[in-house]
Image (tube, rainbow, N blue to C red; front, side, top):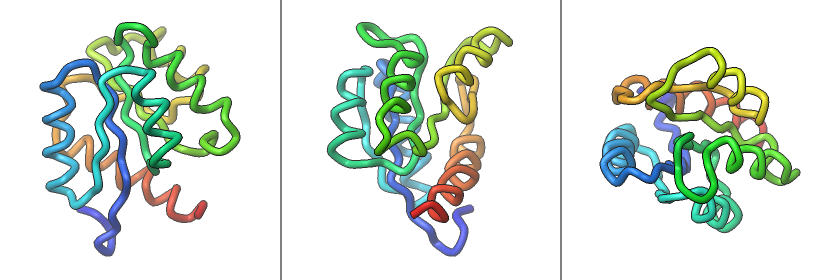
Length: 132
């Protein structure tokens, strides 16, 4: 499903070990490099250290939620163009609008499929490839 064998560095941020592992398996099957973070603070450190090309971020997390995490990432000029896809079990209009307000590009409702995840990587990874 990746175009011309393109490999992207993807960060998955979720406090659920099950969701992180599922996403990791799906993304690795798609040929991508996967980084994992279990909360917003861990995510911020990994974004700074590894500069992922795409971030999947859960909304409901302890300490720093997904909205706050996304807003902090987007405020940093180095990472303002890094696409963030919110992951949530809630799919209300308000939740999606709030995600857009803090800078996320897309919103996937959990449980997501392998195809949905890889399609998002293809869509946003390719736009990142052109920005490099």
